[in-house]
Each structure stands twice: as C-alpha cells, then as structure tokens.
Length: 229
Image (tube, rainbow, N blue to C red; front, side):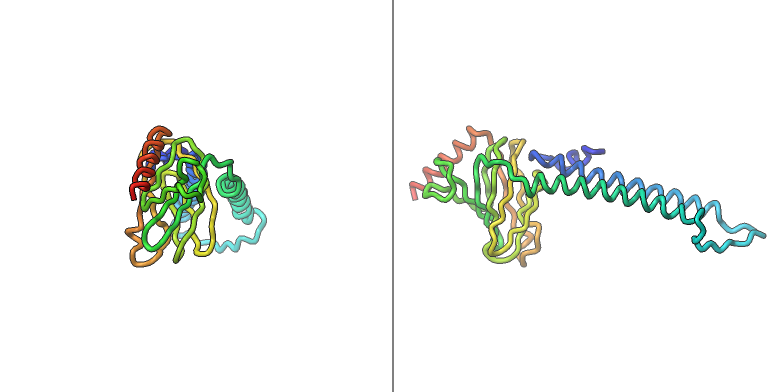
C-alpha cells in the first residue's frame, strides 16, 4: 500500500517517497474511518429496521452512556489528525525549509506560455558569461543536489515535475529557491500546474536527467553552438 503511488507514477527524486508515504498514510487512516463508519451505518440500518409492533425510540444523545459513542470515535479521529499534522510538518520542513547544500544552481523562468532555464557553464557558476540558456528543456545530472531560482515574468505559474513530486508556485516579482536531487536517469515531463491564461494547456517542458558524462557532452555541445553564433 505504501508503495502504490510509486507503482502508479514513477518516483525519481530523493524526497518523492517521503511524499508518497505521507499520502498513503492519509489514505489508510481516512479510509479506515470511512470503512468503519459505513459498516456501522449499514449495521444500524439492518439492526434497527422497521418491525411490526415495535415502536421507534427517540434518542437525544444526552445520556453519558450514549455520548461515549460520539466522544470516543471523535477523540480517536483527532488523534489521527494530530499524527497526520506531525508527519506533514516533518515532510514540509525537510523539503521546503531545510535546503541541503547545492552542487549546482539553475534558474527557472516561467512566462506565458513556456519555461526558460539557465544552466551554469563550464565554470559551474550561475550568472557568468558562459551560462547556457534553453527553452522547454532542462538538463541535470543524476545524483546531484540542485537549487533552483524560480521566477515568473508575467503571471502566476507553477513549476511541477510529477516524478520528483515537485510543485512550486512561480510568483511575479519574487525569486523562490527550491531544490531537488534526481535519482533516475531519463526524460520526464515538466508542467505548469497553475491556470496561467489561454495557453496554459500547452505550457510544457521536459527535464533530461543524465549521467555526469552525458551532461558534460551536452554542455560542451551547447557551448560550441553558442560560440558559433
């Protein structure tokens, strides 16, 4: 059950499983109480169905022995809520608040209706003349921790990489720092998960997770093309 999300949608980042496990536990606890409530409901319907000669009782629920059937389930559900809140805060802190040291930094710019990415060049430093800019295609190395500087040039966008379990709003006038560490090589979808205008549905991109050798080859090719222009 805990790995069901990974079976449905591939997980390809270091924190994807933490989010999957949180969603699974919410589903398990919520599903348990829903199933129990339905069983009790249908049992009551069967037990207290209409019978000839038996007068229905009017129960107000004010007696102590009656109220316990409300208070005990209520308290147990509150306990489950507290467990979920603690788990959610822990996952949120580890992903959104605790930024691990970056191996590299990239810029992600959302605009109607495409994504632009700025990669550091051979010097590995963002913001220098050898930076490489791409549109709708982001290249990263597997096993490297990336910080991304997320911006929007116009309206509210949302940088979403489903296999990373990554979603972060891009807000005009702000630079938001986030991170990810890809664990599996391959090419994956990038989406805008926020309604951003008439072209929202076509605002897509892809992230290419490569080995360091593959990435270096790609970067060298981009640098040669940049020099040729």
